[in-house]
Length: 218
Image 1 (cartoon, rainbow, N blue to C red):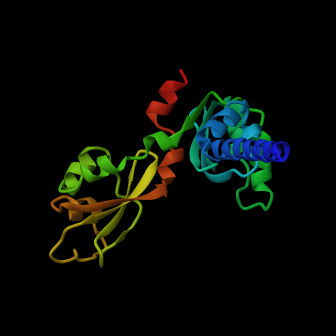
Image 2 (cartoon, one colour):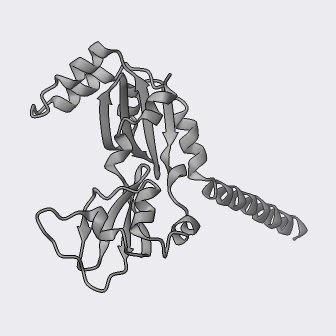
C-alpha cells in the first residue's frame, strides 16, 4: 500500500513539474524569439524568404534600399547601402509586369543589411498619447506630425502620421470645416484641440528615405 502511494505521489510530482515547464514556455516573451531569429538576417534575401513575414513597403534611392515588414507582431525596417548600378536596375523594373516583384527581389536579394530596426520601439505609449490631449493641430504639426493620410470630417477624425506610424486624431470642432477644392488640412486643424488619439498602424512614411536614415549609413 505504501509503495502504491509512493508511486502515485511520484507521478503527481512529475506531472506538476511538466505543467510548470509548459507554463514557463507559454509565458516566454515572443520578442525574445523574434530578436534571436532576426539576428540571423544578413541580406535582403533572408528577409524576403522569412516565413510568415508580411510586407508593408519599400523604397530605393540615394544609395539606400529600405524594406518594411511585420514579423511575429513586430514591425521591422531593414536598411542597406546599394550601389548605383543596382538601384538603376531596380528602378528600371516595369512595375506593371506580372513578375515585377520577383525581379525586384532578385536584384535586391544579395544586398547586405546594414541596419535592422524594431519599429515597435517608436510606437507612442498610452501615456504619450494622453499627453497630447488638449494640444492644438498647430502644436502637432510643429512637433512633426503629418496630415497626408486622409480624414473623416463627420467625426473630425484625421489620419496623421508621426514617425513610422499612423494614428487617428480626433479634433474638437463646433462645426466640421467646409470642403473646397483647395481644402487645407493643416489650416483646418491648426486652431482645433485634440480630443483623442488612437493607434492605427504602420505608415507609408515608414519606408521614406530621410536624412536621418542616410546619415546612419555614413
